[in-house]
Amino acid sequence: MNNFNEEIKDGIVLVDFYATWCGPCKMQSPIIDSLKEERSDIKIMKVDVDKEEDVARTYGIMSIPTLMLFKDGKEVAKNVGFMPKEVLTNWINENR
Image (cartoon, rainbow, N blue to C red):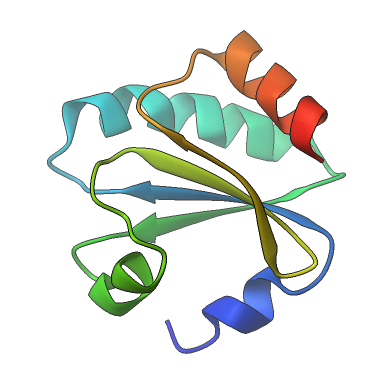
């Protein structure tokens, strides 16, 4: 993913760092997918840490799922672990 910095440089971007074998990630995924459909005010990306090791290492991803919120390319919030939809929505709104 050579264009990661390009992808996060404008506006509010939620990045879901996950792995296909991760149980909590599998629980988080449908919530992220539904937010993607509901929210046009933020960009939502998923990053597979096994395929994108360099990106994961750059952002210090040690545990998954890790959700990071970027604003105009700068990290504004980071959360490790599963988040129910209501909590995730509030977290995004508080940190945007």
